[in-house]
Image 1: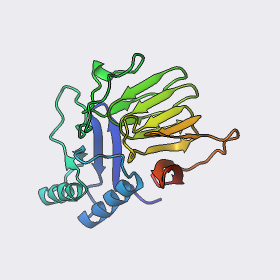
Image 2: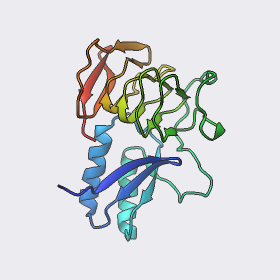
Image 3: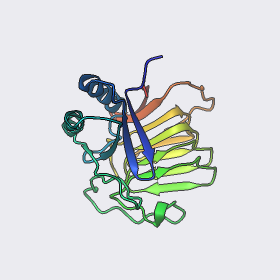
Image 4: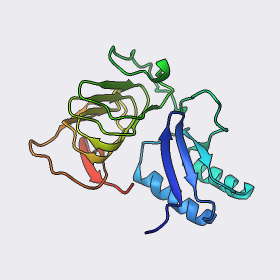
Length: 219
């Protein structure tokens, strides 16, 4: 089994970029590009990653920064003691208030933040964010996610998911197993078939030629 040279993980403070210090800068560049291409639209321009790697020399760290910069991304400053959300560009128009019933992590979800949910979202539970949403668990039937940006579920998605809720047609929905009751992206709606085929590979949903398209991706 091949080693994982670069791993992107979500946490309370946003995204972490874990790098194998034994890899060459060429291997790191190829792996980062592969992972970004597999999740198009999920990392908005301006997203910063906390870099985690043992014994990386300064030139390699600089090279990683340049690689991310080429994709409009960056390396975050060392994490502070207080939790802080990843900064993403604000939408062009002011988004409406978060509806009652939305989960507000740390009591504060705004248009400038990425919401990271570190548990399974149960039926009847709703997560609402003006930014993107990353779920480190499943989305059960009857659960609902509404995001101004993209949605990434690191598990099985069986609930209702609405990405680009305030008009962002470039938003995407990604899940390890994408089996939702309903998918919405911007003003487009796609309903799941009555009999769902269980897949063992990750998929992404996005808008192409005026309709929602679902395709397999590599994690």
